[in-house]
Amino acid sequence: MIYADYNATAPIRPEAREALLAALDLGASNPSSVHRAGRAARAMVERARVQIGGAIGSRAEDIIFTSGGTESLLLAIHGAVLTLDGMATLIVSAIEHEAAAKAAAHAGVPVETAYVGADGRVDLEDLKARLAAWDRDEKGTPVLVLMLANNETGILQPVPEAAGLVRGAGGLVVCDAVQAFGKVAVNAAMLGVDYIALSAHKIGGPQGIGALWHRAGAPLKAVQHGGGQERGLRSGTENVAGIAGFGAAAIAAVRDLPKYAMLSAHRDAMEARLKAEGGVTVIGEGSPRVAGTSNFSRPGFRAETQVMALDLAGVCVSAGSACSSGKVKRSLVLMAMGADDALAESAIRASFGWDTKPEDFERVADAWLEAARRTVLKETA
Ligand code: PLP
Image (cartoon, rainbow, N blue to C red; front, side, top):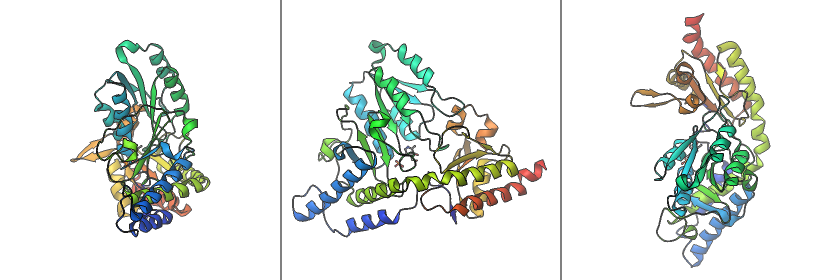
């Protein structure tokens, strides 16, 4: 099997598995307990906090453990809005993951859209004009929600520039770095944002564990109340094994950043072949992208047909468009970039990562071209 769906979830790294199992082997140990068993668990949690903080160039104490990227985004968006007593307007980019977009929609304050251009990047001129005309009495504090790398296209967003504009206007910035962490260097201070959401399972850590970084002094209130863990900002007994696995995965992912960057040469060669032999359009080809993501479309060859044909050939990829109850939903990300229906309906995503072999790219291209030759290429020959 060729696994080319790292943006959905990455296989667990050996280092993460080892740390996770070592934590499970501690036996009964609640990090809030004062006895020795509890202290051993606490030590594991705090070690991972240092590892994850270090991986993004931050202090350990600015890291809050959560159950994943979705919860980190909810905590950042709702937790920030709570501190503003509802006197806020969220500006959410048109290409955010549903975890961010839906958290924003349920935050109880108005939501505006930050548009993206055909290049898949947020329109900074539009953002600038919007902030210049901002009526604070009417709209309250602007809170921007902007991802660093898009999950469908891999396109990188100009986060430091956008954050400079918003923070310069007295606003706050939430950055979803779930798909960027472990693929490009993520430095909290250099991004210039107030909150950063991270998730372990996209970098080869366990599923169901994530973190929220918050700038020292950034306003934040808890949305989940209880025993007061994570300095009162996220109650609930910590997932010690998950946290230990996340810490080990973060160290390995940062170590492997140069190796990950080298995937782009193989990705580009695969795309060149698919374009030449299969007539595909590569989405975001001219924009800065993470090295291991490829989103391409062949109008007339529906995404779900491609995914099924590749699955039969032992290749796992995702549809750029999601299927629910038999109805095909076109990718909102591609639509936001101005793609027409035919392009958006036929886009699929192949994504690669830490355990990808160079020949995997060729195998994906071989399988795709074979499927296309039996169907869409035959029809148009
Ligand atoms: N943000 C982005 C960009 C994602 O791709 C994902 C997962 O697909 C999430 C957030 C949600 O992360 P998690 O699965 O850890 O809740």
